[in-house]
Image 1: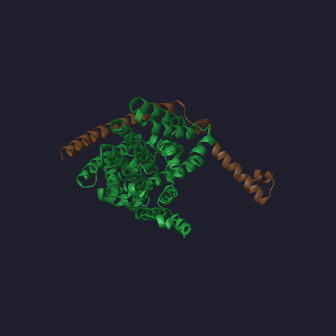
Image 2 (image 1 turned 135 degrees about the vertical axis):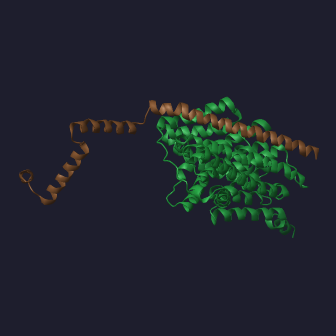
Image 3 (image 1 turned 180 degrees about the vertical axis):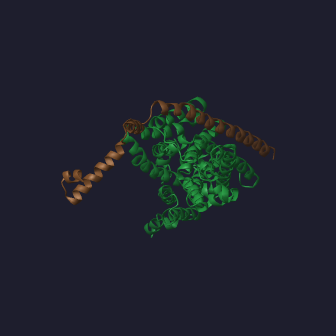
Length: 376
Length: 96
Protein backbone atom coordinates (compact mmCIF):
# COMPACT_ATOMS: atom_id res chain seq x y z
CA UNK A 1 0.00 0.00 0.00
CA UNK A 2 2.88 2.25 0.91
CA UNK A 3 4.53 1.72 -2.45
CA UNK A 4 1.24 2.35 -4.23
CA UNK A 5 0.90 5.61 -2.31
CA UNK A 6 4.50 6.49 -3.16
CA UNK A 7 3.85 5.70 -6.80
CA UNK A 8 0.72 7.90 -6.79
CA UNK A 9 2.66 10.75 -5.18
CA UNK A 10 5.28 10.52 -7.91
CA UNK A 11 2.70 11.04 -10.67
CA UNK A 12 1.98 14.41 -12.20
CA UNK A 13 -1.73 14.08 -11.40
CA UNK A 14 -1.08 14.07 -7.64
CA UNK A 15 1.23 17.07 -7.80
CA UNK A 16 -0.48 19.42 -10.22
CA UNK A 17 -1.25 22.89 -8.93
CA UNK A 18 -3.96 24.98 -10.53
CA UNK A 19 -1.44 27.62 -11.66
CA UNK A 20 0.61 25.00 -13.49
CA UNK A 21 -2.47 23.71 -15.29
CA UNK A 22 -3.42 27.23 -16.36
CA UNK A 23 0.09 27.89 -17.61
CA UNK A 24 0.07 24.63 -19.56
CA UNK A 25 -3.14 25.82 -21.18
CA UNK A 26 -1.38 29.13 -21.99
CA UNK A 27 1.45 27.05 -23.51
CA UNK A 28 -1.08 25.11 -25.60
CA UNK A 29 -2.68 28.40 -26.67
CA UNK A 30 0.73 29.60 -27.91
CA UNK A 31 1.14 26.29 -29.79
CA UNK A 32 -2.32 26.77 -31.31
CA UNK A 33 -1.48 30.32 -32.39
CA UNK A 34 1.77 29.11 -33.94
CA UNK A 35 0.45 26.01 -35.69
CA UNK A 36 -3.15 26.86 -36.59
CA UNK A 37 -2.93 30.63 -36.99
CA UNK A 38 0.71 30.89 -38.15
CA UNK A 39 1.42 33.66 -35.60
CA UNK A 40 5.24 34.02 -35.44
CA UNK A 41 5.49 30.19 -35.36
CA UNK A 42 9.28 30.09 -35.29
CA UNK A 43 9.31 31.54 -31.81
CA UNK A 44 5.84 30.91 -30.39
CA UNK A 45 6.15 27.14 -30.94
CA UNK A 46 9.30 26.58 -28.86
CA UNK A 47 8.06 29.22 -26.40
CA UNK A 48 4.72 27.47 -25.94
CA UNK A 49 6.44 24.11 -25.56
CA UNK A 50 8.88 25.63 -23.07
CA UNK A 51 5.91 26.91 -21.07
CA UNK A 52 4.50 23.38 -20.93
CA UNK A 53 7.85 21.85 -19.93
CA UNK A 54 8.56 24.39 -17.22
CA UNK A 55 5.19 23.77 -15.55
CA UNK A 56 5.52 19.99 -15.34
CA UNK A 57 5.40 19.10 -11.65
CA UNK A 58 8.45 17.26 -10.23
CA UNK A 59 10.38 17.43 -13.53
CA UNK A 60 12.33 20.51 -12.43
CA UNK A 61 13.04 21.82 -15.92
CA UNK A 62 13.51 25.37 -14.66
CA UNK A 63 15.01 24.58 -11.28
CA UNK A 64 18.74 24.75 -10.69
CA UNK A 65 20.26 21.89 -12.70
CA UNK A 66 17.29 21.63 -15.07
CA UNK A 67 17.66 21.91 -18.85
CA UNK A 68 15.63 25.10 -19.23
CA UNK A 69 17.46 26.65 -16.28
CA UNK A 70 20.79 26.18 -18.08
CA UNK A 71 19.39 27.39 -21.38
CA UNK A 72 18.00 30.53 -19.75
CA UNK A 73 21.12 31.42 -17.82
CA UNK A 74 23.55 30.54 -20.60
CA UNK A 75 21.73 32.33 -23.40
CA UNK A 76 19.18 34.84 -22.19
CA UNK A 77 20.49 36.07 -18.85
CA UNK A 78 23.83 36.71 -20.52
CA UNK A 79 22.12 38.34 -23.52
CA UNK A 80 23.90 36.01 -25.97
CA UNK A 81 20.86 34.53 -27.76
CA UNK A 82 19.15 37.82 -28.70
CA UNK A 83 22.49 39.15 -29.93
CA UNK A 84 23.17 36.09 -32.11
CA UNK A 85 19.66 36.46 -33.54
CA UNK A 86 20.38 40.12 -34.21
CA UNK A 87 23.47 39.10 -36.16
CA UNK A 88 21.31 36.76 -38.26
CA UNK A 89 18.75 39.52 -38.81
CA UNK A 90 21.61 41.77 -39.95
CA UNK A 91 22.72 39.08 -42.40
CA UNK A 92 19.17 38.94 -43.79
CA UNK A 93 18.67 42.71 -44.07
CA UNK A 94 19.17 44.61 -47.30
CA UNK A 95 19.77 48.29 -46.56
CA UNK A 96 19.52 49.19 -50.26
CA UNK A 97 16.09 50.84 -49.96
CA UNK A 98 17.23 52.86 -46.96
CA UNK A 99 20.48 54.03 -48.60
CA UNK A 100 18.57 54.95 -51.76
CA UNK A 101 16.11 57.10 -49.78
CA UNK A 102 17.84 58.07 -46.49
CA UNK A 103 15.02 60.46 -45.55
CA UNK A 104 13.04 57.39 -44.45
CA UNK A 105 15.34 57.15 -41.42
CA UNK A 106 13.23 59.95 -39.95
CA UNK A 107 10.18 57.69 -40.19
CA UNK A 108 12.04 54.98 -38.28
CA UNK A 109 12.90 57.59 -35.66
CA UNK A 110 9.35 58.92 -35.37
CA UNK A 111 7.89 55.45 -34.85
CA UNK A 112 10.05 55.06 -31.73
CA UNK A 113 7.71 57.55 -30.05
CA UNK A 114 5.56 54.51 -29.29
CA UNK A 115 8.31 53.24 -26.99
CA UNK A 116 8.82 56.46 -25.06
CA UNK A 117 5.11 57.34 -24.81
CA UNK A 118 4.38 53.90 -23.35
CA UNK A 119 6.73 54.70 -20.48
CA UNK A 120 4.03 57.08 -19.25
CA UNK A 121 1.36 54.41 -19.59
CA UNK A 122 3.41 51.92 -17.59
CA UNK A 123 4.02 54.45 -14.83
CA UNK A 124 0.32 55.44 -14.86
CA UNK A 125 -0.64 51.80 -14.28
CA UNK A 126 0.95 52.11 -10.84
CA UNK A 127 -2.29 53.83 -9.81
CA UNK A 128 -4.00 50.42 -10.05
CA UNK A 129 -3.65 48.46 -6.79
CA UNK A 130 -1.50 45.34 -7.25
CA UNK A 131 0.66 46.89 -9.98
CA UNK A 132 3.99 48.37 -9.08
CA UNK A 133 6.24 49.14 -12.04
CA UNK A 134 9.60 50.81 -11.47
CA UNK A 135 11.18 52.96 -14.18
CA UNK A 136 13.28 49.93 -15.19
CA UNK A 137 10.14 47.77 -15.51
CA UNK A 138 8.39 50.53 -17.45
CA UNK A 139 11.35 50.84 -19.85
CA UNK A 140 11.45 47.09 -20.45
CA UNK A 141 7.70 47.05 -21.14
CA UNK A 142 7.85 50.12 -23.36
CA UNK A 143 10.37 48.51 -25.72
CA UNK A 144 7.52 46.24 -26.94
CA UNK A 145 6.61 49.31 -29.03
CA UNK A 146 9.86 48.80 -30.94
CA UNK A 147 8.24 45.68 -32.47
CA UNK A 148 11.55 43.91 -32.38
CA UNK A 149 11.65 40.59 -30.53
CA UNK A 150 15.40 40.23 -29.91
CA UNK A 151 15.68 43.86 -28.76
CA UNK A 152 12.73 43.42 -26.37
CA UNK A 153 14.19 40.21 -24.93
CA UNK A 154 17.68 41.74 -24.64
CA UNK A 155 16.44 44.83 -22.81
CA UNK A 156 14.00 42.93 -20.58
CA UNK A 157 16.72 40.46 -19.56
CA UNK A 158 18.86 43.44 -18.48
CA UNK A 159 16.23 45.69 -16.88
CA UNK A 160 13.38 43.47 -15.67
CA UNK A 161 14.15 39.73 -15.95
CA UNK A 162 11.09 38.84 -13.84
CA UNK A 163 8.84 40.36 -16.53
CA UNK A 164 10.68 38.75 -19.45
CA UNK A 165 8.11 36.02 -20.15
CA UNK A 166 5.16 38.41 -20.37
CA UNK A 167 7.15 40.98 -22.38
CA UNK A 168 8.34 38.38 -24.92
CA UNK A 169 4.85 36.91 -25.31
CA UNK A 170 3.38 40.40 -25.78
CA UNK A 171 6.12 41.48 -28.22
CA UNK A 172 5.83 38.43 -30.49
CA UNK A 173 2.03 38.28 -30.29
CA UNK A 174 1.67 41.90 -31.35
CA UNK A 175 4.28 41.47 -34.09
CA UNK A 176 2.11 38.66 -35.44
CA UNK A 177 -0.93 40.93 -35.14
CA UNK A 178 0.63 43.78 -37.17
CA UNK A 179 -1.69 43.09 -40.18
CA UNK A 180 -4.68 43.48 -37.85
CA UNK A 181 -3.52 46.35 -35.61
CA UNK A 182 -1.96 48.67 -38.20
CA UNK A 183 -4.42 49.04 -41.15
CA UNK A 184 -7.27 50.73 -39.19
CA UNK A 185 -4.81 53.27 -37.73
CA UNK A 186 -3.27 53.87 -41.16
CA UNK A 187 -6.67 54.41 -42.78
CA UNK A 188 -7.89 56.66 -39.97
CA UNK A 189 -4.90 59.00 -40.24
CA UNK A 190 -4.70 59.27 -44.06
CA UNK A 191 -7.05 60.40 -46.81
CA UNK A 192 -7.83 58.29 -49.88
CA UNK A 193 -5.75 60.69 -52.03
CA UNK A 194 -2.75 60.36 -49.71
CA UNK A 195 -2.93 56.57 -49.85
CA UNK A 196 -2.91 56.76 -53.66
CA UNK A 197 0.36 58.70 -53.83
CA UNK A 198 2.90 57.01 -56.08
CA UNK A 199 6.53 57.41 -55.12
CA UNK A 200 9.51 57.99 -57.42
CA UNK A 201 11.59 54.95 -58.32
CA UNK A 202 14.57 54.34 -56.00
CA UNK A 203 18.08 54.91 -57.34
CA UNK A 204 20.36 51.88 -57.70
CA UNK A 205 22.72 51.44 -54.73
CA UNK A 206 26.33 50.42 -55.33
CA UNK A 207 28.14 47.60 -53.56
CA UNK A 208 30.64 49.94 -51.89
CA UNK A 209 27.78 51.88 -50.26
CA UNK A 210 26.31 48.68 -48.86
CA UNK A 211 29.70 47.60 -47.49
CA UNK A 212 30.57 50.93 -45.88
CA UNK A 213 27.08 51.50 -44.42
CA UNK A 214 27.28 48.96 -41.54
CA UNK A 215 30.79 50.14 -40.71
CA UNK A 216 29.61 53.75 -40.60
CA UNK A 217 26.63 52.86 -38.40
CA UNK A 218 28.93 50.99 -36.03
CA UNK A 219 31.37 53.91 -35.85
CA UNK A 220 28.55 56.31 -35.05
CA UNK A 221 27.23 53.99 -32.33
CA UNK A 222 30.71 53.67 -30.84
CA UNK A 223 31.06 57.46 -30.75
CA UNK A 224 27.60 58.44 -29.54
CA UNK A 225 25.88 55.47 -27.86
CA UNK A 226 28.25 52.67 -26.75
CA UNK A 227 25.45 51.07 -24.69
CA UNK A 228 23.74 50.15 -27.98
CA UNK A 229 26.86 48.57 -29.49
CA UNK A 230 26.03 44.98 -28.43
CA UNK A 231 22.83 45.11 -30.52
CA UNK A 232 24.02 47.41 -33.31
CA UNK A 233 27.48 45.80 -33.44
CA UNK A 234 26.13 42.27 -33.97
CA UNK A 235 23.58 43.60 -36.46
CA UNK A 236 26.32 45.36 -38.42
CA UNK A 237 28.57 42.29 -38.33
CA UNK A 238 25.81 40.18 -39.87
CA UNK A 239 25.11 42.84 -42.49
CA UNK A 240 28.78 43.25 -43.40
CA UNK A 241 29.11 39.47 -43.86
CA UNK A 242 26.16 39.63 -46.24
CA UNK A 243 27.31 42.60 -48.29
CA UNK A 244 31.09 42.12 -48.53
CA UNK A 245 30.60 39.02 -50.69
CA UNK A 246 33.74 37.19 -49.51
CA UNK A 247 32.24 35.21 -46.62
CA UNK A 248 29.10 33.80 -48.18
CA UNK A 249 29.39 30.65 -46.06
CA UNK A 250 29.41 32.65 -42.82
CA UNK A 251 26.58 34.87 -44.02
CA UNK A 252 24.55 31.82 -44.98
CA UNK A 253 25.19 30.19 -41.60
CA UNK A 254 24.27 33.37 -39.70
CA UNK A 255 20.97 33.72 -41.56
CA UNK A 256 20.05 30.04 -41.58
CA UNK A 257 21.52 27.38 -39.29
CA UNK A 258 22.80 29.64 -36.52
CA UNK A 259 19.67 31.76 -36.25
CA UNK A 260 17.48 28.65 -36.38
CA UNK A 261 19.40 26.85 -33.61
CA UNK A 262 19.40 29.99 -31.47
CA UNK A 263 15.68 30.56 -32.07
CA UNK A 264 14.89 27.10 -30.69
CA UNK A 265 16.86 27.78 -27.51
CA UNK A 266 15.64 31.36 -27.21
CA UNK A 267 12.03 30.19 -27.43
CA UNK A 268 12.59 27.47 -24.84
CA UNK A 269 14.45 29.89 -22.55
CA UNK A 270 11.67 32.48 -22.73
CA UNK A 271 9.12 29.70 -22.24
CA UNK A 272 10.90 28.74 -19.01
CA UNK A 273 9.93 32.16 -17.67
CA UNK A 274 6.25 31.40 -18.19
CA UNK A 275 5.74 29.94 -14.74
CA UNK A 276 2.45 30.47 -12.93
CA UNK A 277 3.88 32.75 -10.22
CA UNK A 278 5.65 34.98 -12.77
CA UNK A 279 2.85 35.13 -15.36
CA UNK A 280 -0.50 34.80 -13.64
CA UNK A 281 -0.84 38.24 -12.15
CA UNK A 282 -2.42 41.55 -12.94
CA UNK A 283 0.93 42.97 -14.12
CA UNK A 284 0.86 40.59 -17.12
CA UNK A 285 -2.52 41.99 -18.15
CA UNK A 286 -1.06 45.48 -17.84
CA UNK A 287 1.93 44.47 -20.01
CA UNK A 288 -0.31 42.96 -22.69
CA UNK A 289 -2.46 46.12 -22.74
CA UNK A 290 0.55 48.45 -22.84
CA UNK A 291 2.10 46.46 -25.68
CA UNK A 292 -0.95 47.15 -27.87
CA UNK A 293 -0.85 50.84 -26.93
CA UNK A 294 2.88 51.05 -27.74
CA UNK A 295 2.34 49.46 -31.15
CA UNK A 296 -0.56 51.75 -31.99
CA UNK A 297 1.25 54.94 -30.94
CA UNK A 298 4.36 53.87 -32.88
CA UNK A 299 2.30 53.25 -36.02
CA UNK A 300 0.41 56.53 -35.67
CA UNK A 301 3.53 58.64 -35.11
CA UNK A 302 5.22 57.02 -38.13
CA UNK A 303 2.24 57.81 -40.37
CA UNK A 304 1.95 61.38 -39.06
CA UNK A 305 5.66 61.98 -39.62
CA UNK A 306 5.33 60.68 -43.19
CA UNK A 307 2.38 63.05 -43.76
CA UNK A 308 4.51 65.96 -42.56
CA UNK A 309 7.43 64.90 -44.75
CA UNK A 310 5.10 64.60 -47.75
CA UNK A 311 4.02 68.21 -47.21
CA UNK A 312 7.58 69.50 -46.88
CA UNK A 313 9.42 67.27 -49.35
CA UNK A 314 9.91 68.03 -53.03
CA UNK A 315 9.38 64.36 -53.93
CA UNK A 316 6.06 62.74 -53.01
CA UNK A 317 6.00 60.45 -49.96
CA UNK A 318 3.08 58.10 -49.37
CA UNK A 319 2.19 58.44 -45.65
CA UNK A 320 1.44 54.71 -45.44
CA UNK A 321 5.15 53.86 -45.48
CA UNK A 322 5.49 55.68 -42.14
CA UNK A 323 3.69 52.79 -40.44
CA UNK A 324 6.57 50.49 -41.42
CA UNK A 325 8.85 52.52 -39.14
CA UNK A 326 7.87 50.33 -36.19
CA UNK A 327 10.24 47.65 -37.58
CA UNK A 328 8.53 44.19 -37.48
CA UNK A 329 10.46 43.35 -40.67
CA UNK A 330 9.09 42.60 -43.25
CA UNK A 331 5.50 42.32 -42.04
CA UNK A 332 4.97 46.06 -41.50
CA UNK A 333 6.32 46.85 -45.01
CA UNK A 334 3.98 44.24 -46.50
CA UNK A 335 1.03 45.80 -44.66
CA UNK A 336 1.93 49.27 -46.03
CA UNK A 337 2.12 47.76 -49.53
CA UNK A 338 -1.23 45.99 -49.12
CA UNK A 339 -3.09 49.06 -47.83
CA UNK A 340 -1.50 51.11 -50.64
CA UNK A 341 -2.65 48.59 -53.26
CA UNK A 342 -6.21 48.77 -51.93
CA UNK A 343 -6.28 52.51 -52.69
CA UNK A 344 -4.34 52.32 -55.95
CA UNK A 345 -3.90 48.88 -57.61
CA UNK A 346 -0.86 50.15 -59.55
CA UNK A 347 0.97 51.46 -56.52
CA UNK A 348 3.65 49.11 -55.21
CA UNK A 349 5.03 50.53 -51.97
CA UNK A 350 6.93 47.45 -50.75
CA UNK A 351 10.45 48.62 -51.61
CA UNK A 352 9.70 52.16 -50.41
CA UNK A 353 8.38 50.79 -47.12
CA UNK A 354 11.47 48.62 -46.61
CA UNK A 355 13.48 51.82 -46.00
CA UNK A 356 11.57 52.92 -42.87
CA UNK A 357 11.17 49.26 -41.92
CA UNK A 358 14.92 48.63 -41.56
CA UNK A 359 15.34 52.17 -40.16
CA UNK A 360 12.91 51.05 -37.45
CA UNK A 361 15.22 48.14 -36.55
CA UNK A 362 18.11 50.59 -36.10
CA UNK A 363 15.83 53.05 -34.31
CA UNK A 364 14.60 50.49 -31.79
CA UNK A 365 18.18 49.31 -31.14
CA UNK A 366 19.17 52.94 -30.54
CA UNK A 367 16.14 53.46 -28.27
CA UNK A 368 17.11 50.31 -26.32
CA UNK A 369 20.65 51.68 -25.97
CA UNK A 370 19.28 54.99 -24.65
CA UNK A 371 17.07 53.19 -22.10
CA UNK A 372 20.02 51.03 -21.01
CA UNK A 373 22.26 54.06 -20.67
CA UNK A 374 19.74 56.17 -18.74
CA UNK A 375 17.85 53.58 -16.69
CA UNK A 376 20.04 50.46 -16.61
CA UNK B 1 1.33 59.90 -4.98
CA UNK B 2 4.43 62.04 -4.72
CA UNK B 3 6.50 59.03 -5.73
CA UNK B 4 4.24 58.55 -8.75
CA UNK B 5 4.62 62.20 -9.73
CA UNK B 6 8.38 61.86 -9.49
CA UNK B 7 8.24 58.80 -11.74
CA UNK B 8 6.16 60.75 -14.26
CA UNK B 9 8.74 63.53 -14.29
CA UNK B 10 11.53 60.97 -14.83
CA UNK B 11 9.54 59.27 -17.61
CA UNK B 12 8.94 62.67 -19.25
CA UNK B 13 12.62 63.51 -19.15
CA UNK B 14 13.47 60.09 -20.54
CA UNK B 15 10.94 60.53 -23.35
CA UNK B 16 12.25 63.96 -24.30
CA UNK B 17 15.92 62.95 -24.14
CA UNK B 18 15.21 59.65 -25.90
CA UNK B 19 13.30 61.15 -28.84
CA UNK B 20 15.81 63.97 -29.29
CA UNK B 21 18.66 61.46 -29.29
CA UNK B 22 16.95 59.01 -31.68
CA UNK B 23 16.22 61.82 -34.16
CA UNK B 24 19.72 63.24 -33.85
CA UNK B 25 21.38 59.84 -34.29
CA UNK B 26 19.31 58.80 -37.29
CA UNK B 27 19.59 62.37 -38.67
CA UNK B 28 23.37 62.06 -38.54
CA UNK B 29 23.01 58.79 -40.41
CA UNK B 30 21.17 60.67 -43.19
CA UNK B 31 24.10 63.09 -43.37
CA UNK B 32 26.52 60.14 -43.46
CA UNK B 33 24.63 58.51 -46.35
CA UNK B 34 24.27 61.76 -48.30
CA UNK B 35 27.83 62.93 -47.80
CA UNK B 36 30.04 59.84 -47.54
CA UNK B 37 28.17 57.02 -49.28
CA UNK B 38 27.01 59.04 -52.29
CA UNK B 39 30.59 60.23 -52.92
CA UNK B 40 31.89 56.69 -52.60
CA UNK B 41 29.27 55.54 -55.07
CA UNK B 42 30.46 58.10 -57.61
CA UNK B 43 34.13 57.24 -57.06
CA UNK B 44 33.69 53.46 -57.05
CA UNK B 45 30.74 52.56 -59.29
CA UNK B 46 29.67 48.95 -59.59
CA UNK B 47 31.21 46.77 -62.28
CA UNK B 48 27.81 46.34 -63.92
CA UNK B 49 27.40 50.06 -64.26
CA UNK B 50 30.89 50.29 -65.80
CA UNK B 51 30.00 47.66 -68.39
CA UNK B 52 26.85 49.54 -69.19
CA UNK B 53 28.68 52.80 -69.65
CA UNK B 54 31.28 51.02 -71.77
CA UNK B 55 28.50 49.69 -73.96
CA UNK B 56 26.98 53.13 -74.18
CA UNK B 57 30.34 54.59 -75.22
CA UNK B 58 30.73 51.95 -77.88
CA UNK B 59 27.24 52.61 -79.04
CA UNK B 60 27.78 56.35 -79.37
CA UNK B 61 31.09 55.76 -81.13
CA UNK B 62 29.52 53.59 -83.80
CA UNK B 63 26.51 55.78 -84.03
CA UNK B 64 28.82 58.51 -85.18
CA UNK B 65 29.94 56.18 -88.01
CA UNK B 66 26.35 55.95 -89.09
CA UNK B 67 25.13 52.42 -88.14
CA UNK B 68 24.22 51.40 -84.63
CA UNK B 69 25.65 47.99 -83.51
CA UNK B 70 22.18 47.03 -82.27
CA UNK B 71 20.76 47.52 -85.74
CA UNK B 72 23.61 45.49 -87.26
CA UNK B 73 23.04 42.68 -84.74
CA UNK B 74 19.29 42.67 -85.38
CA UNK B 75 19.75 42.55 -89.17
CA UNK B 76 22.37 39.79 -88.92
CA UNK B 77 20.17 37.60 -86.74
CA UNK B 78 17.12 38.23 -88.95
CA UNK B 79 19.09 37.30 -92.07
CA UNK B 80 20.50 34.14 -90.45
CA UNK B 81 17.04 33.12 -89.32
CA UNK B 82 15.55 33.74 -92.74
CA UNK B 83 18.27 31.68 -94.43
CA UNK B 84 17.75 28.82 -92.01
CA UNK B 85 13.99 28.83 -92.55
CA UNK B 86 14.15 29.00 -96.33
CA UNK B 87 17.39 27.06 -96.72
CA UNK B 88 18.55 29.32 -99.53
CA UNK B 89 22.15 30.10 -100.46
CA UNK B 90 23.39 33.53 -99.47
CA UNK B 91 24.19 34.50 -103.10
CA UNK B 92 20.46 34.44 -104.04
CA UNK B 93 19.80 36.97 -101.35
CA UNK B 94 22.57 39.12 -102.55
CA UNK B 95 21.22 39.04 -106.13
CA UNK B 96 17.78 39.99 -104.88
